[in-house]
Length: 142
Image (cartoon, rainbow, N blue to C red; front, side, top):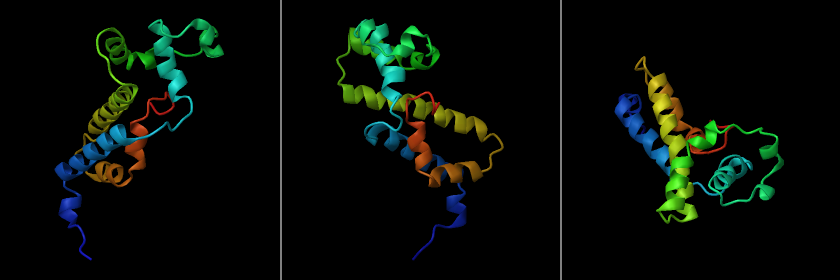
């Protein structure tokens, strides 16, 4: 069996292409949720903020003010636009919601990789689970 040449594997452009593809695939093709609180920490809170969910239907964390507003704020513009003038399906919104942290993760990887070594990129590329985690919306992942 042929092996990838070391120069190709350690080529930063090649690794970035793989990294972007895996993040996009994780954001677009993930099903369900990884942590059961992904929906309740972000999406349910946003629906309440937009007036679509009554306060009585919200979990006890709301009245105790346990959840900060900063994390759901990342996803608020899409929910607001969808509520007011876009008619996106829940599946499309979910894919777009996953794209936000995936793109932020790519930005963070780019910033962490300042020394221009390909070790971090190579490690991140071969472990698909990491891009999968980057495409989650729960606060534990962020």
